[in-house]
Length: 103
Image (cartoon, rainbow, N blue to C red; front, side):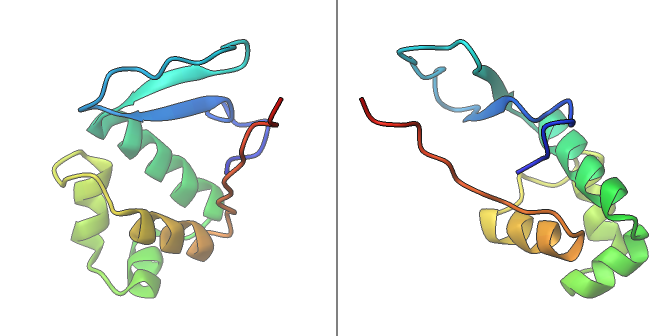
């Protein structure tokens, strides 16, 4: 999860092959269609804030630098959740899942 100072902190990611979810209250929810551009921007922010070069990030992930560049330029399909979590860990970010309070 991105910290509260991030411009993406309040985004809700919605798979592009589904319609937008119906929320009972959408006061703080900003749905975003999950396309390659949105994913590439998120990956770019994670890598940038982590302070590692693409080469060092790719080495730690066990992939080539070209693989990461393909994700950043939208030439590769959406990364798996496991890959994304590993990338976040390598870059020092935390990924959390939060459920809204039940009424």
